[in-house]
Image 1 (spheres, rainbow, N blue to C red):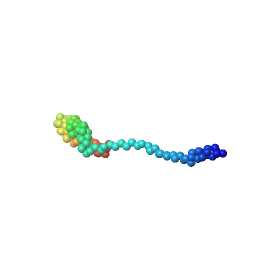
Image 2 (image 1 turned 180 degrees about the vertical axis):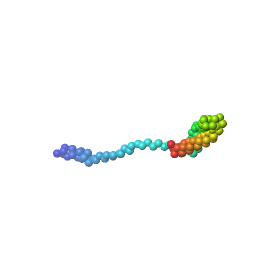
Image 3 (image 1 turned 135 degrees about the horizontal axis):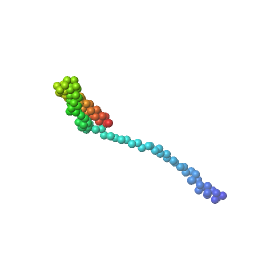
Image 4 (image 1 turned 60 degrees about the vertical axis):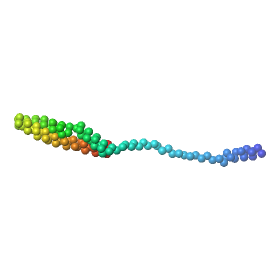
Length: 115
């Protein structure tokens, strides 16, 4: 019997021990892309380059003068061709300038929005 009591006493600490389980939740990693917003000067330079690459006033004037000369020649002969070329150059130049301004404004606004 003393052997049985000794065995029970030896087993007591093992029975009284408790196990603590720590559960740790895993949070998924997120990737955040931070993009620097360009300054007004950078956007202005980008818009100016885009506007310069468009035909602009000169391209519009050249195209308008050819179109005006062709129309004037059909309608009024050689004098009509000269007048048509002059009128076409003016109208084409104005249209080209408006197109150039539109391109500048669109590129600048897109840049300032971060696009």
